[in-house]
Image (cartoon, rainbow, N blue to C red; front, side, top):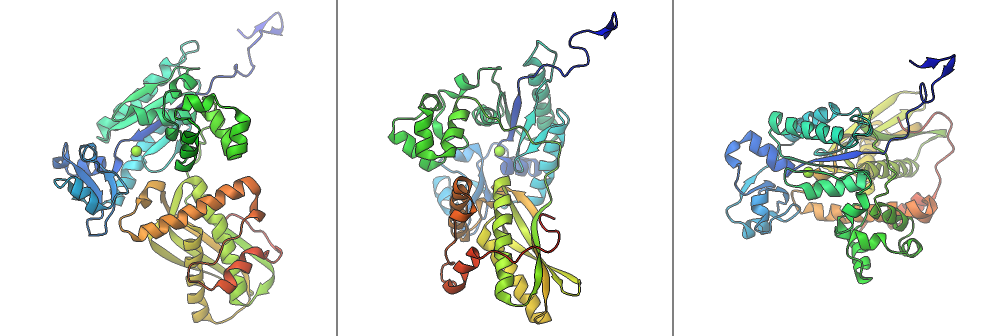
Length: 433
Ligand SMILES: [Mg+2]
């Protein structure tokens, strides 16, 4: 009965009181290995290494049986096999992983409309308000336990999960729930749960930061939480403050669900005057590559296919695509692919006025696919470190602070000023497509 004596009863028709955020992080265990075991049940219980088998192959996923011998992902396969000579090497089957990944995310969408995939084998699930009022905690445990049960029964994949008050705590917790476990951190207990955990397990803390903290005697998240915030800010900038919050169980980032991840990331720009020379076009491509690369890195995704789009002065539009051997989010690799496509077009079509240049990255895959299967990936890894460093600098100081040096052995005369100059003014609609 919402009405009494013509007046609304307090509370009726109002927004419900603010609920405490509750987030689950759900993570499939040794994903590639587990899928391979569904494909070939004889692999169960045996040491399995998924990855490139050749002399320069790299481990993409190592089963727990092989980890006991020191095997781990990103290790050269030859080294892993020296540690565990009985390991069975299985080449990766990406189509199967993608299929299993979709089924996994679909099951999670059955327990909440707010599901944010984080790579192929992980997702954040918003469970705020699930379950009866006053019985906070019971509904969410049931919902996640049920989803994990379906993942084990229907997909036959081991899975670990943690429900907590923030994404960060949930992520740390799901790691500690492995293998095949579930941890529920009761509302308000995030900081206490995190306190004894090593700082390097906190997602935002990289190896260098962990080292610096260790040098100051800070080894656990609890010790990090107890530090003076200003000291952290002076030492690490904005990241220092963010890490301090997360160490105390405070992570304001919501689960960004409700949308399927974009299938491509792109940038294009229409010029005020048609461009004729190659240098101006490659400059535009380099700028697009910078933005597209940054978006991919921020989303934790890599692209296999790069597409160049050109619109001539007569409004005819042409696209050319190239599929890379290994998926990338490297600015340099994206720019190089775009330039190669441009050179192909120019060789074919000759010089014509160009009014629009676009660069798109599609055929996107999760972060973990890049672990690498041969050692050409080491160069790529160094390139990525540079990208991440530049992203971090931009995060702190804005775009102007950064210019990229010339590529190793590249044409030093062109690469540098190219990055500093601004593009010609916009004439038409531009931006993400
Ligand atoms: Mg996983």
